[in-house]
Length: 325
Length: 250
Image (cartoon, rainbow over all chains, first blue to last red; front, top):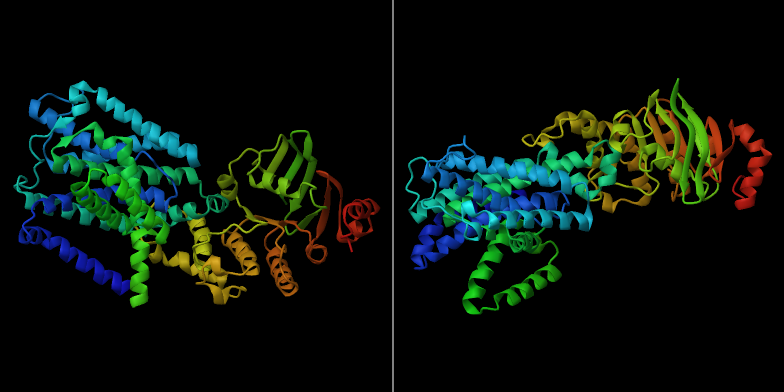
């Protein structure tokens, strides 16, 4: 199984590398934008999967961190453009190597606050409280007229990175791909670390872990913060890609979409969220082009995948390859 | 030296006195058995000792330290080990991984996100040392879901031992075991009892009489008798309490 996975990952990376050429070849450059969005949503969904799949915490408010990451980039850009200091002492920035870490940091702080309160509950209450916090943030940004209210912030130019021409769509694609590869390498390390083992233990049997001397709350909060940071990172890239940040990014339906991606791809699997994000975005794009009632069809597809496969697309693929091998 | 001292413990569920002024001790080198008919409040008592239920009155001390209101993980860190009556394991993990998790809990460093769990050599060596010579030695890489009931009971004990506790609370380790498995478990517990003091809650009287250095009898939440195996066997009150409920005391 191991060498097979390595082969498939190499093949997938090669494919991703050649995506810009392929979209040119078939004469559909808009597909390149789709690929960018898939990569970004894959990171957001994988972040959610870290708490939901590996940690067993059903967070229904992860779009909040996605949005906070996007707004960090947007607000820093707005202050860069206007030259005014944020809170009177923070200068704005349009440098990606500053805005991305800032977005990760800020979303981590939000995740720490929201997680510290939400994780005192469990089950359905946890779902509702994370949802409530996310909606509070949504309405906060809708009311935040200084940064565009419900229209959000326009980012006139994508952040700069190492002198690259970020207006070039292909360059931007490779930048996003590069960050995605780094992101998933980091996630791979975390999942297979000492902490990753504890997190999976808590997901399987919290009572047992407590009886071994692990205080579940602390570990869950740590996972929640890491997960929020990941979602914020994805949001920051999305703001750079779309060149705006708006409250819609943290609407509860976005949290729902992230959750659908995770379930579609395979809860608690490493590659699942990537498959889920790809399947969701591709279905959305093509079904929406075909009929305006695309969500109805999407619902049907989701139903079939959940009922007919064990463990989503990832589970399905694993079974196909195992049978073939 | 007294490892565990329970003093005047009381727990009420509504009008029901589940634990009624219970006081007992577990000394070094002792296997203290707690017996009693169904519904006597044995599990309630165990759960108060572990910290899953808070007592209404009384004190619990572990090696001199008051743990009455301490959260579960803190008690475990002080050396309180337990096994569950209904086994509670990491179901998707192998025997080896389950034991390694206990070693990991003891070793610490568990907030590390940038190391490799597979590369913690010391962790796996210690897990293998616990497995070596045990009944599960040949089943190290079997997933818990595929283990028999008896094997799970064995694994419960191994996990508790891997944590290197100063005191073991055993909640019916014989429950549901076949005759041969019971004999294995008794032999194993006798061996463990030489180094780790235990509070043994058990229904299987043959096991209790084979293992215990002291027996306390719990009826309706109250300890009605406490003494050596011979004393308890000869105690009229105990016979009556047992024969009233079920004729188990053979």
